[in-house]
Image (tube, rainbow, N blue to C red; front, top):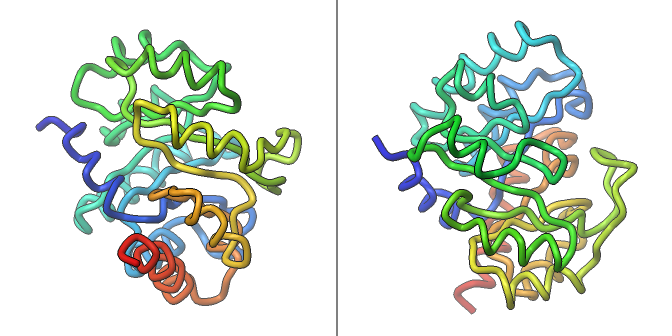
Length: 220
């Protein structure tokens, strides 16, 4: 099956879910992702850099089956070998990871590949890679606890990306319920929200509320 056809899920989910177990108030990723799915998120990235390889592998096998059964798409952050080992739907890579062309050659033509960008030069380069990648990340928009050393790019780069990207994009970084309106009003259709989701007591209700904001604006 060509999983790149699953990009329609990217467009339709509104929120791009990302794991962050260290911020999840003692809950494991299995519980958090289950609530994300129940709330309506269908495009989910596994981002866990501190765990050992075996723990990541065993956890991702469970998550892969959960997300598949829910009709979602499962993306692995950075770890191409892990994505292959668990037959994930794709990977998300950064500017310092293997080149997109190489990742595409390793994964084959049917997996989804996302690429993070942080400025206009990286965006233009990504536009030239659209044979190899399926979407781009734009951010961090604001300061974020998940990447404390990353310089925020603000709304200026987000607005530039919306106008000039030849690929679907997801806005990421420090986006919360209290500042999501400005991201939506810029024209963003897919938004990654991490800490504001995983730290809340009722993830399902939080997700429903956030998605309601995104989709109500689209149809205003």
